Image (tube, rainbow, N blue to C red):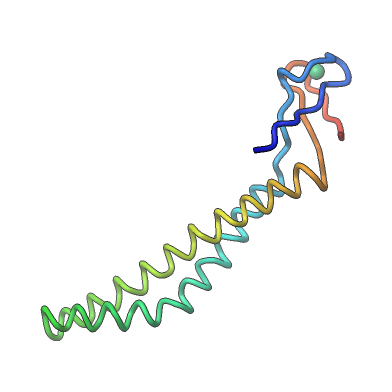
Length: 112
Ligand SMILES: [Zn+2]
């Protein structure tokens, strides 16, 4: 974990300084969308597995249920995986590329 918070230029302490995480939020959204798209793409296999399992236990209805469940699970898993990666990439950009910080005590915004 990185924990190098710079000092506020006005207060001269870093107790109230927080990272402005614009990119992190953007990364979470973009990653989530990309991940769910990838999840849908890979969900075809999940849907087939679900349909196979579903039809084994409950023909006709089970096939439909299994397909839907498999596709949803794939997209959902993809979304969370993508959002997590996007969030991490975004935080890295915020911290190391943009480096904008905000002081909650005096309200100053500054670059490291
Ligand atoms: Zn300050």
